[in-house]
Image (cartoon, rainbow, N blue to C red; front, side, top):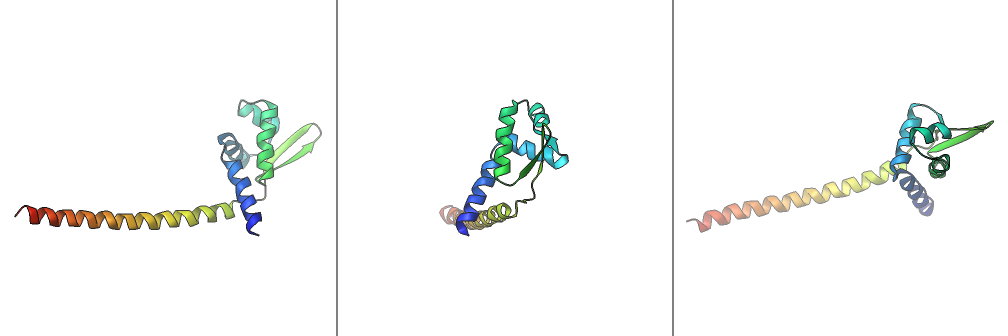
Length: 121
């Protein structure tokens, strides 16, 4: 299960790491599109767009269907719930660390203020 989740997260974050692929997802969120239309919209070669769509497909974020000579892309059924949960765990961890850092800084400021008053007498 852990290996499956790790591979799943790796595929998703790999797919999302590229701005073109994120743009493709945004576009497909508005309407289905052919690979040719996506290539034109993103000023890419057809081969380049096919590679991007392939990465998105491997991650389950996009599905394609070939009808005649046209391959149409649409958002996949997968949602990013596992990825959001993973990010949330680390957000909470960093929030806790920053809260602790804030306490240390406040304590240092308080001590500086006290030391300043004692040295100023």
